[in-house]
Image 1 (spheres, rainbow, N blue to C red):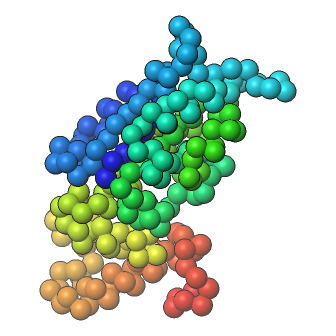
Image 2 (image 1 turned 90 degrees about the vertical axis):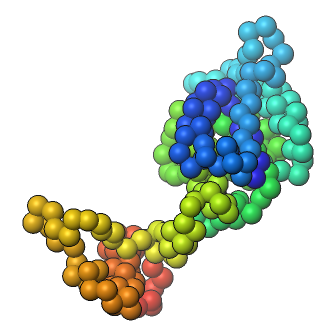
Length: 228
């Protein structure tokens, strides 16, 4: 997969993209990531990418010219899935992550300031939000999207089964996990996990996943499902 990120703060994205699973995926050639500086496409000596809003109001608005120039300078941009990160976009979730993981090329557009000139939205194929809150800019959201999407690519996660059984992948939260020691500060691991009975372990995990989802995220459980 190829990912291009357009931002006025390339270092915000470049540093975390060099570590952990994403860093290894890049080293192995599974993910090609390019971070592009929007200011490189400004036309004045001050590399200005924002201006006062028409109609007045607080803050500054990102200008359309640098955005069009930056995106159109990306090789193959017309065929890429171009995502504008904005609070007004579609809510990002595991289903969308899985959808995007099937794309060959993603372009992520990170806004700043009060917002981006509305005409820039015509460059995007999608507008995406990672939640109902406001960030200083789209870079943190871009990193969330990149990590959630690229870890679904074949070969990125060492054990594919761990991806298939995670929270949200099955429509429920994940079941509780335990490891050694079997008892710690008076807290014991559930006996069923020590029993060696694989059928009982799987049943316990399904039940715990359902219980946890029902208790913590009832919005994920459809009315009429067992236990609801």
